[in-house]
Length: 531
Ligand SMILES: [Zn+2]
Image (cartoon, rainbow, N blue to C red; front, side, top):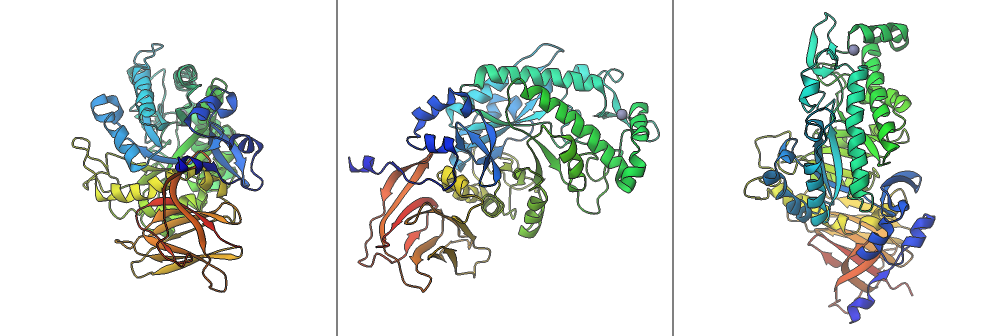
């Protein structure tokens, strides 16, 4: 059949990695499975175009995540039906909680049945997993620790306020007993992941704890912490941020110790997420003190060297705030990953993911949550837990996620290069945009029914372009404004780096330089006739 002939590998970025060159011949599922058997397919951070990118099975992988609400993975009845819905939204990574109290209900007795079931469900639905580990810290609290930890306040020391009051639900970050117990559980988890997943790589990323810190005090005032604080000269050195910086240092050291320990067992990429504080908010009151907020990110950079990156949880309104937070968490040698992003009305999630993966070069983007809207709790969730009804925002997110998912590898390869341009229609009265490439201008005219056309254009080589997105028509012109004819236009998707044609878009017009309409979100490959 003619269609089969259209399955070709079609691009190789200049300066691409040697492994990429080796892998770019055939990347259908069969060969991915073959690659998974050798160690280079292990999920890992690699350098690409001057930044760091997550690689899985030897190829760059952009996380398009959906997180399940915090408690929903206790029950298969609630958890399971969401997997196929997540896949339909275009998600490629289920972001799933893993509770310490569930895997170690009694000290030293481990139970991985639910973890195994999550892995099985993800595989069945073609999804990867980012595991979010709720151990010593979950939104700063000890809620998800096992009862043997929660009931023993002497062995597992709690944080103390300045007046000596114990905070029952917040751990002292220098407690060696709590650290040792948490490490034991994580080591068991990583040994288990190595045993069940090292030839599949379903789990590609682990979040170490969740929104770490202490609420109720700026630092722990137990005798041990106070001694360290005084002996370390924190007051003189850090002045007004001393208590917060000390707590950040103590927690970063704890997280780094856990990360180093588990990476020697099974070296998955590991990150830490953050409950953000605003400029005038108070640590320990408005947000957990000692978490990796921007004002102590330098402490984390210096202390948590085994952690691959620090990621913001973003629930602010507006593009400017979103950009500003993302820029704060880029650099310092870390790639940008949006660990959580608000869902629901007016959160801009469907547009912010475009900015994240293009101008901000993020390695991934995760929505919180598939089944609960936040911060506007009372609105409809993306997917209703009981009847699986989708909110309008779920369709909008699908329109963004699906085409990006279907061109993920070439998009990741073009990040941080001049081969990538993008546009987002921010206002209904904006009509068009022009994207300049060397010698060629891409002209897009918006036709989106809600006034939010969005697209990404990748240049694969001199004559081939990929257009990702929907709600616009697109033409190619010279810098002088002359239409450039298109020799071939195809709708399809990338399977790894290989292009799979789904539908030839036949040109009905005699003038082959007439723009093509990309209304339904999709991936289109264009071959220009530059002769
Ligand atoms: Zn303490």
